[in-house]
Image (cartoon, rainbow, N blue to C red; front, side, top):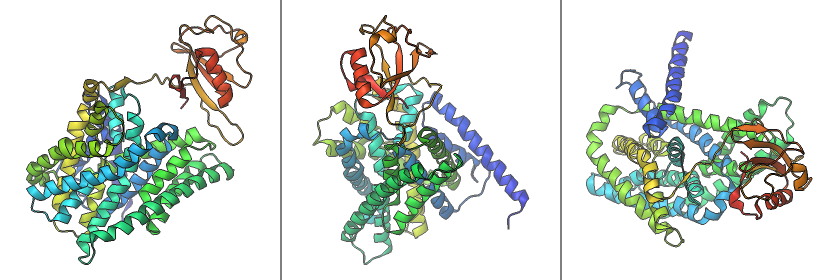
Length: 498
C-alpha cells in the first residue's frame, strides 16, 4: 500500500514534468523541432540514466497508458477533421494509409534483415512498427514557423496520419502472432485484416452516430457532465471494438470523424476540451516513453539505427509515396513533400512495447532501434519541413485566425453556419450602408472585423474595403450574401468560422 508521503511525491514529480513539458512546447517553435521530441528528451533526462534518477521499467503500464492516450488522440484528430475538406483526397489518403504503410514496412523490413541478424518475420516486424506517420507533429512545426501548405496537401496529410495507425497496429499484432505461433502462416492474416478493419469501421460509425444522438438527447442538468460523457464513450468505443475482434484505433478515429461532422450541443466547448485532453495524453505518453528508455542502451544501436533511419527517410517512404500515388494526378513537388513529411511519432514507440510483452526474441534491440529511429526522424525531418516546403514552392501563408469574442455551435434547433467573408477592394458594396446593400433577411451580420477591431453592425454601418464580415445564416442565404459581396460564389473565398 502506497503511503500518502509517496503519493505526494509522485504528484509533485508528475506535475513538475508536465509543467516543464508545457513550457518546452513554447520553446519548440523557436528551435524548429516538434514538441514531441522535447517531451521525450525531458522524460529521458528524468529517467534512471539522467539527472532525475526516476526508476521506471514497467512496459505493461507504459503500453496501457499508450493505448489509452492514442485512443483520445485519434478521437480528437477525427473530431477536428472536416469531411468536406478530406473527401476530395479520400482515395489518395486511404491508399497511402494502407498500401503505403505496407510498402514502407516491407522495404524497411528487408533492409533491416540485410544489416542486422534478424529473421524475415523479425525484420518485417521492425518495418511494421515504424511504418506509420505523425502529421500532428508536422503541423505543429509548420504553425510555429507560420507556414501552411497549398491545395489539398494539408487535408491529405490529416487523412493519412489519422487513418494509417490502424494498419501499422494490425501488421504489428499479426507479425507478433506469427513469431509466437509456429503453426500460423501469412495467409492467416488476411481474414484477421478483414475482420479488424470491417468491425472497427462499422462500430466506429455506429458509435459516432450514437455519441451525437446521446449528446443531443441526454439533456444533462450540468454542462460539465458532457465532457465526462464523451470521455466514457471514447473508452467504450475502443474497448468494445477490441473485445469484438475489431481495430479499436480505427473505431475511435471514425467515431470522432462522424461526430465532428455532425451538429451537437456544446460543440465548440467539447471540441476544445477534447483538444486539451489530446495534448495531455501526448505529454503523458511521451514522458512515460522517455522514462522507459535507457540512453546508455541506445549507444550500441546508433550505427544500425542511423542506416535504417536514412533508408526509411530517403528511400522507403519516398518509394511508398510515389508508388501509391502514381495512379493519381498530382504535382511531383507535392509528392516530394508528402515523401519528406513522413515524420515518426508516438505510435511506433508504443507498438515497440508489444514485442517486449509478447517475449519476442531480440525485442529489446527492436525497442531501442525504434526509439532511435523516431528521435532521428523528429530531429531531421521535423526541423527541416518548413525549409523543404518553401524550397519546393508548396507553402502558403497561414490565414489570419484572429479569435472572435463569441462562440457558436449549431444544434438541432438552430440550423445554419457562421462564416467569414472578406470584402474585396473593388466589391460593389464598398462605401454603402448595410441597409442599402439589400442582404437577405435570413443572413445576420454578427460582427465586423476591421483591421484589429471588432464592430457591432447596424443598418447605418458603412462597409469598407478589407472588412471581414462574420455572418450567420443557412447555405442559401450565405450564397446570396457572397454574390452581393464578391460577384461570384467561389468556395476558396469562404471559410467556416471555427
